[in-house]
Amino acid sequence: MSKIRSALLAPWLMAQGPMSVGGQAILEGIMMRSPHSLAIAVRRPNGDIVVKEDAWVSVWERARFLRKPLLRGAVVLFESLHNGVKALSFSANEAAKALEETSPGRTPDDGKAPAPPSKAADAAILGTIIVSGLFGFALFAALPHFLTWLAGTVTGNASLASGKDLSFQLVDGVIKIALLLGYLYAISRLKDIQRVFQYHGAEHKSIYCYEAGQALTVANARTFTRLHPRCGTSFLLITFVVSVLLFSAVFPLLPTFSSIKAVNQLIYVFIKIPLMFPVAGIAYEATRLSVRFPTNPLVRALTWPGLMLQHITTREPDDSQLEIALVALQKTLWREEHLDAKSGSDEPEVFDSYGRFTEQMGEFGALPVAA
Image 1 (tube, helix red, strand yellow):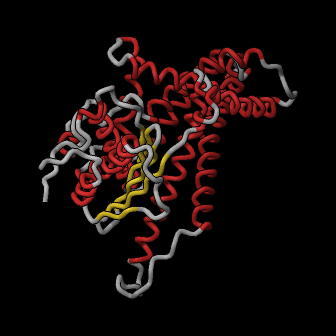
Image 2 (image 1 turned 30 degrees about the vertical axis):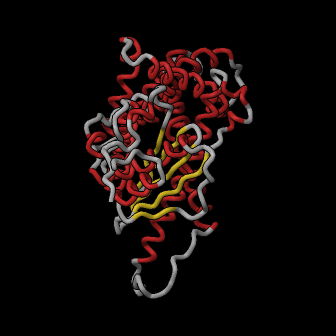
Image 3 (image 1 turned 90 degrees about the horizontal axis):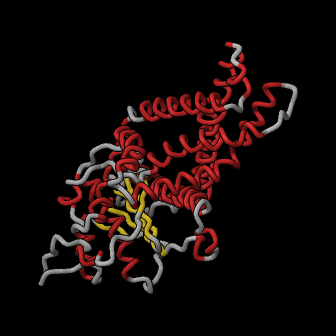
């Protein structure tokens, strides 16, 4: 059998520079997206690797005006949420299959095929995400606002009690960041979340390896840092900072909507929802600058807090997790080299090992193979 070189998508693929590739850690797996592909790779308890890849068409292709600065950030946010739901649903279904196959009273050779994912299961996942979104809004938007307003009311500080002044937005922002840090640290203590954070680290390392033009191997990916400036964690922190600046400019212009102070503050909280679209747009442009000018001292200073936050949201992955990241990444890059290839089937591919995956990729001509 021909021996596959250490070149899993070798540097020659990057003659014109690396394309933008991003990802997301999920349950025992990783989702990767390139300009024309979305791939999900998940590790089953028995060691099998399950891969689902589809051609990806951004809404930008149908509405090109959305590529404009300050608009594209909101598009990226919505598409990321959509893709995240899809990836989480896939990984949750795979986990459910594994539980069913190992459930009491069932043997692997009892002749029963695993039940296909049900619409009820997908609806349950979507419902969980909606509830999580509402929880996030309550924790990181409503609670900081009302805590700041309450502090101003109790202390008699008119600026804090107004809900509009710069000092209010600064205190509100500090509370948001404190809650974010506390929340991330708390969930990072959970064993299952720690594994997700390991996959998060694997995602970053594999993307760094690709962006550096090195062959996509476990050995190469292992050498890179798990802290990446384009991470969603950094983006989240940037949005908090941008929101303070934007709210400080907008809220002083707002009228008093109700004579009942608590109701007036509640209206202010809900006004923040539509304002998150321009916040996302500005934050996205700031993130793009950090990628374009990574060595600029000012840019490095601005991105440093987000990188430090990733010490919480990422963990050093093991080799099996790096394999999953590389599988998802290689699948997206395969699509970029074969744009006319048939879109992914409804049934995912299953490989009994990472070695078998790389062999097949070589057989399909996706990877350079030594004679």
